[in-house]
Length: 77
Image (cartoon, rainbow, N blue to C red; front, side):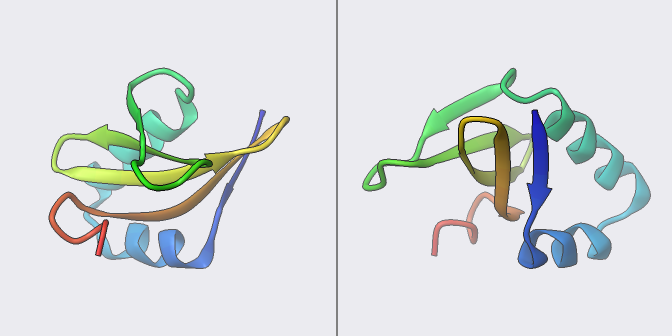
């Protein structure tokens, strides 16, 4: 499947250390495996937990669209 990371997610990844970027990248490329839950209140959003980071994404038939990446306290605001 194709993986697309939107601008907001790319910007956040660039601000992280190399180790954290690699850790998050491994989790993204392992989709749909991992600690995944549907986001309450939406019908097409999911979150992937990677330690203290959350990756918010949606799916289409042949693509994962990474909408946002952030810390667990700030990502849902």
